[in-house]
Length: 154
Image (cartoon, rainbow, N blue to C red; front, side, top):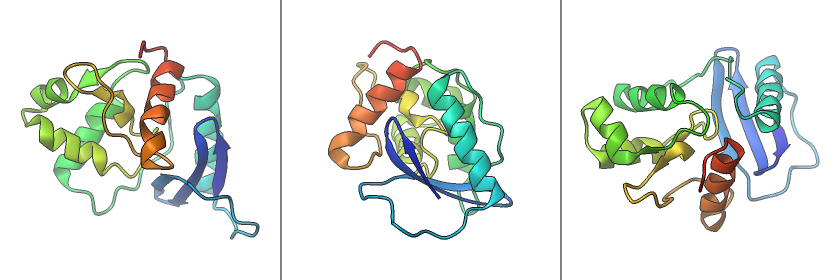
């Protein structure tokens, strides 16, 4: 299922167990697409709510089959942050008793951007670094937009 959003076209992949993947699309929505599942419809509704009100908390289940225990731990810590809260890679690593590069790796492999808010993680200097987006060039612009949407000063 595809969803037009303020940060571009998103592709939602979900099944009865939950959201599996949320992708930024650099291409146009296909003219004909398959049917949508009830879970995809639910995810789309909740994403629309988030884009209207950044304090919205997603309530649908996540299907993170295949993800390592470590990545799940990092992603859970990110989901526990509040909208507009900015973390550093080092700060989050300190909370999880790991290394900042390991946190960066977990963020870069996040299959659910926006929902698992890795956009809230910045460099120690406060510089925005590394974010998936519709294109590598647009990734940081999307990260900045999401942070501003949540009330953070960027």
